[in-house]
Image 1: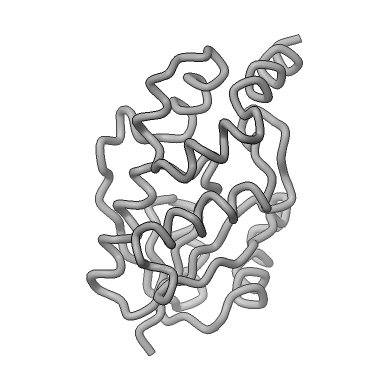
Image 2 (image 1 turned 60 degrees about the vertical axis):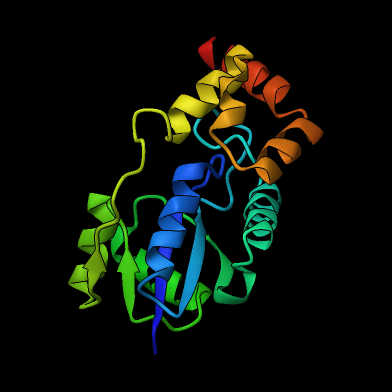
Length: 174
């Protein structure tokens, strides 16, 4: 089996995520894309719903002709019950033989279960990171539009994502 796992929160899905997926697919036949923290939304760290993120990713994969090699699965957090989390991932995802991640805790947890973990190169990390893009959205800075694939940009505009982020930032700063 040449199926790997790549987990992220994808808040929002951006061009760095897409480049990582393409990079992984140069090495793997199939990729399970785990949408982490799937139960959370409407916060500074996790502003978009699971459904919104699934649509962002799926439409982007479709536009890149990658849908036939990728499987999207929701992955809930276990709220600091870290030893249990890998079992939850294995329950939610189809079988996979390796993981791609740069997150130190994710790496540790899978390695402790004997599952090989490989690093992913960062692509334009200073701009292609969710925290930076969410801040741009909240500030109404149009630079965010150049950092996400077109399908993601369209979804964020359709759902009023800039307005949502602005309101969330206002609420959570209190």
